[in-house]
Amino acid sequence: MWCISDTTQSISTQWLSTLSHIPPLHLRRQQALLKEAHKIASIPDLLAHQEFMYPQSLRLKSRWPPNQTAHCLMVKPFNLEEKWNIEWRSNPPNAAALNYDPTRKWSI
Image 1 (cartoon, rainbow, N blue to C red):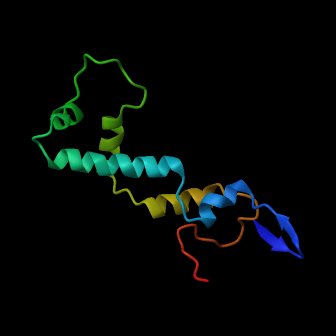
Image 2 (tube, helix red, strand yellow):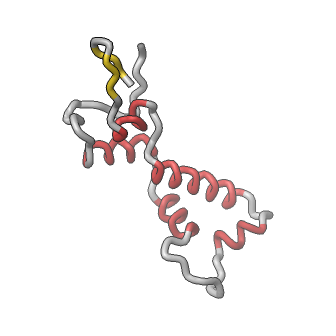
């Protein structure tokens, strides 16, 4: 909320996550999956290591299996801030023609 001449107006919901410096949900999920995949890959004693690295074909087929998504993310370097910046530039909300970097923290 911001105040102009004693009237309160709400901020557009498209700006809230950017102003509070929170990346989009799908990018945070990708980052969490990548972190978990690195942890599982680094500890071969875990039961999840075999399940994750060498999936069995007897299971029901998923449209987006996490192990395939994690392997794709591990092949290319994943940089959350860079992906967020690219997404912001390609699909800006209203009045985002400003040259604004969503990953930059503002000092007051």
